[in-house]
Length: 293
Image (cartoon, rainbow, N blue to C red):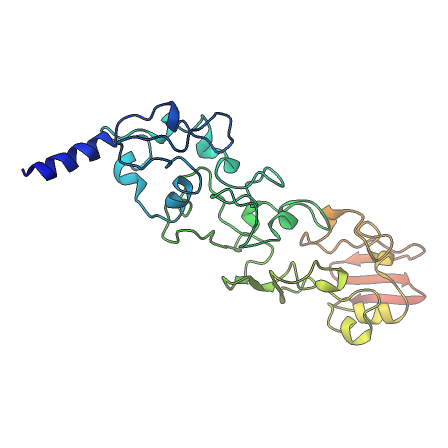
């Protein structure tokens, strides 16, 4: 074998030698890391830095499993990733991303330590309780159990978190890959026809369905007999008093955008419901098995 090839082989072998303290890296910054450490190992100096190590793994710029094994537990002279990463890193979502606004793992923070959530700015709005209960990751993604779960780190769409709405309240929903969702229940007045764009301003009541003061033409797009009731002077809180008391804010987020129309018999009414039909008196009118839809 030519000397040049022998020398190259020696350098590659040296690159698979165990990492020392200079390469003992974890994203939580619990230890001091010298990202400029020099070595004759396979990876270059500074490879433990998040703007190099994390992004190369994310974008599949190198195939980590070729040296570190299919389970990243080491192969031959190559180390297990567990040798440098702290215990529990494989199932700790915030070890690789997220952890700034909450502990769900949703950005911001990205793999390169960027705290600007460029891909989907409303992440925090979705995973925290506000006008709705906090949505789990499964609402929009297939949720991995660890870093090697199918469809996660080493999938065939590097750098992209695939959207899958099949387990959500909008199983027919579609993500266009460029910031837009359509065929949605959650942004569609409960009728699974809504759409929203990532660049839309923070949404008020009329951002997903007509508001109490939107007027008849807007009310007519709502389900069932909403338009008739609103036209006759009833307000949201008359029938949904456990969800709102002022028609402008949400009293109980768990009962909003939850897939269930939470109806409360208005004060003074003597209604009995059977499925989507009502019998009894309400708002000065007698109902005899009147259907809502």
